[in-house]
Image 1: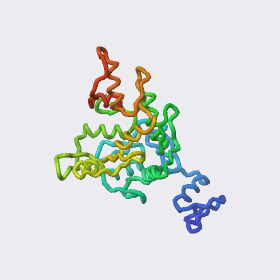
Image 2 (image 1 turned 60 degrees about the vertical axis):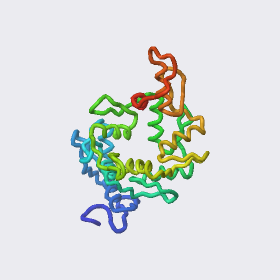
Image 3 (image 1 turned 120 degrees about the horizontal axis):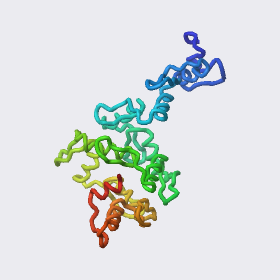
Image 4 (image 1 turned 45 degrees about the horizontal axis):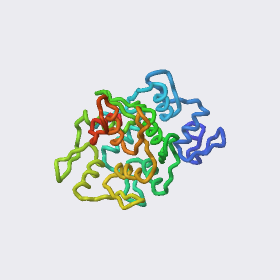
Length: 280
């Protein structure tokens, strides 16, 4: 017994039922089912619960848009403390999770788990509208917005909207002008250490990403992903005016300009503004 509480920390067994926990913290949480104790309360309503995870879930579901936890280094905000803690690892530049089969490193264990599926070719999630496949459900949901045109993430400083949070975070850096990482060879500056690492390959000529179907090599994963589509029939980008489909967003941007009033044919160059319009 521990101060009259119905559990034994040494045995990790509940005295009210047959439950046995793997840690003292989990046993404490379990025993609240029997005691009815709800030590966590919502600051916006009278909701109470047994754990911080339950409170975070409540805030996300009930108080949509409520994000009390903010990063002191950028404009990132979130509805729960644990997400903020994971986010802060980005600023530290320390990627503590390493792949045993290649040089990939990640800030979070979940990102490493997803990466490992590339080695096993495990892609359990597929789009019903095209041949796109991926390793994570959230990646599939972001992809599907390309078909629906949904852009649920707006910038609070301009009219920019996008289909995923990561794109919004990248966009927000335009307003922040916070670029602590600089190249030792040229005047390039950026907001993230991984971006600087990718940039340095311009000077070193390093191309660690290789195509499995041909001899193509490149310096970054996004370029490899675009190239890989040339070997498949996957065309995730769809014109909202006609039935045109393509494998690259810049090709869709160029195609869309053929629908502009007064256009007499395809425009040979897609500008950065065109691509922003497609991805927004």
